[in-house]
Amino acid sequence: MKRLLCFTFLLLGTLVFSQENEEDTQTGDIVATVLNAQTNFPLESVHVINLNKVIGTITNQDGEFRITAAVNDTLYLTYLGFKPQKVRVTNDMFRIKDTKIFLTELAYALEEVIVRPYQLTGYLEIDVKNLPVNNAYQYSISGLNKSYEGGSKSPSAVTKVLGAILNPADQLRNLFGKKPQQMRKLRKMKEDENIRDLLASKFDRETLKQLLQLEKMDIEDILNNCSYSRSFIRTANDLQILDAISNCYEEYKVLNKG
Image (cartoon, rainbow, N blue to C red; front, side, top):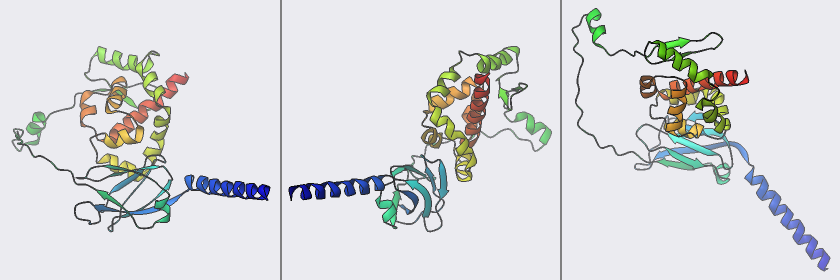
């Protein structure tokens, strides 16, 4: 009798463990609705990114979205004028079909802005000369796919470009070597149209930081060591930054193999 009871408890324990383990590895499509935390109104065109699987989607006019995920994946939601939010995927999100996610509006303190217009005359040839020009020249190297920005047009600028990508002691080895998994996400990010559309509208590097798990300083260091100009780093949108990092990383791998 005791042996039978022990066997029964052991069998039940095994079944419970198997069920919990199955739930922990549950994967599939989840459906949820994004709402304004202040008004409870649905938010349309909210970008939702699965940071683990590097795929994205957007909410429809009812605030609903569907995305492939697994338990413990992290969803990153971003919407203009609202605070970005991370949501950890749970088992309940697969079982419950009316999951609601609330985003909070950002409070902006408007400061005085002084507008200094350019002295335009209405004559194209004259006005073009009055507009600021990006003086960051690019240098192309045979065998590589892309050109590099070298800042000013001078012999020292060319030397800087060559030194940055050919020197085996360059910091690129350390920067890319420390983040191999994040760098492998670059290709997936470039292939997802929803992610590309989101990055094209961003200039704050926050979404890139979440996707690549890199700090803003690391992103700037990578671009600096790839000889991109300060004006490009300061003014480019996040998609341009992504493409720049990706091109630099691909060429780094080619040169590193060589």
